[in-house]
Amino acid sequence: MTAPAGILKSVGAADQNPVLNISIFLAFVAVTMVIVIRASRNTRTAADFYAGGRSFTGRQNGLAIAGDYLSAASFLGICGAIAVNGYDGFLYSIGFLVAWLVALLLVAELMRNTAKFTMADVLSFRLKERPVRMAASITTLAVTFFYLLAQMAGAGGLVSLLLGVDDSLGQSLVVAVVGLVMILYVLIGGMKGTTWVQIIKAALLILGAAAMTIWVLALKGFNFAAVLEAAVNNPENTNGEAILAPGIQYGAMPLDFVSLALALVLGTAGLPHVLMRFYTVPTAKAARQSVVWAIWLIGIFYLFTLVLGYGAAAFVGPETIASAPGGVNSAAPLLAAELGGPVLLGFISAVAFATILAVVAGLTITASASFAHDIYTSVIKKGNVTQKQEVRVARYTTIVIGVVAIVGGIGVQGQNVAFLVALAFAVAASANLPTILFSLFWKRFTTRGALWSMIGGLVTAVGLIIFSPVVSGQPNSMFGEGVDFAIYPLSNPGIISIPVGFLLAWLGSITDKTVESKKRAAEMEVRELTGYGAEPPVAQ
Image (cartoon, rainbow, N blue to C red; front, side, top):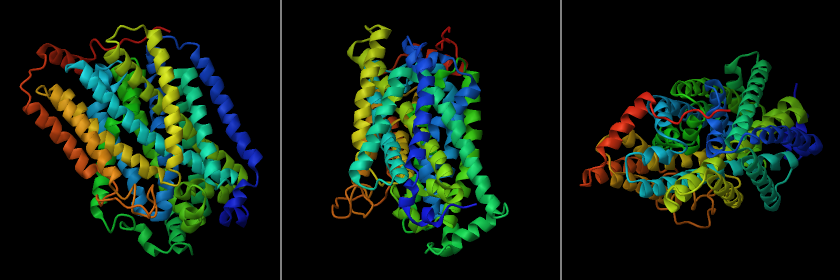
């Protein structure tokens, strides 16, 4: 039932069949590229490029949302966090899932009814368009950048594990290849091609995780308690039964957990690439169906991560995982190698690779839409451009963002991807969510409040991250232990930056004597509640 012992204890054995591993990767890329090319035949207008022609059903879009949301953090990062830190690692799964209730109840349908392509369409609907669009684009690009860093870090560690590449140059080349494939997906297929890649990837990821979960449970007589017992008794587990209780990761600094929880629960509703998915369906009803499907799929998957994380702790061991190329992100692939040898390792790693490609493609198209639609078309050209010109600028932006993602991804190799994504959630919850909620629900909200909230929340979140142990002062910091300019003690800024974002939105509005257009406010209220006037589906 298990692979040779060498796969378990020697990372080098994971590359014993590199031809098989590379073949599976290439097969996935080839199949999805064919789908992307076919989808590109109908990508002509801005609505096609940004929203897939609004042609997807609620079920299809729910699968795509799951594919977009179940990133490298969900699969690689959470499994690794549970394997190494036990219960504290599972807190990521809980936070990511609960966050969808906020998105479903407060944001999904209203955003879809109000906007056309991007988050800035909603935020600028009844406020001064140019400054609000500019600020929204800046926050969108910032959140996208942090999220892209996490995916690229996961890609480097994953493929390095498969090919036995542990030097920095080799991992950098892997990141560059991922970035190039991502750029091709978006340039060729736009949102329609990207969505189909996400649908395929979501199905493969959930089925692959389900198969591994059943396999782990079968080895212990379908008794999850026996899996936990094996994890506790693994000779590499130096924490004993503490891995079953809170405290290993956040026990010394409980406020860090509170900060993380706030970021995870509130961040989803402010993630631009998730919000943009609501515009790919033709009706508000389909948007609601999308979120319901996504919640079920994502919830089931996160139950799998609990079994897989403790399964990796039981069958592989925390020390082996931590010392492998990619660090804690290698837990799921190493568990696959222990269970099914090189074949299962190659398949699961290809699924994880597909996960990364699909998510980075979704992030990239969101960022390119934000620049082309919000900054170039609405701010610089004041709407005086054709759709063809706008799409061309979006494609140019895709290339630039891809290059930036490659450079940034090279710089964060070895970081836990779940942890990096939590930073993106904190920025989204601090800079985007307050403005979204006030725009949708508070008539007194003003342009000043929006600008103060977005820029203030962004600066606070990023500033705290820069001066936190994430960047310097710790062995696993980006700059290492030798460089120390950390003055903020927590690893996640959410506990401070999120309240700051809400406070600035309120303070900016009540001190602003400007009265925003009551007509536009009334129009927005009718539109967000009824869908009347929302962008109609595009004929195919």
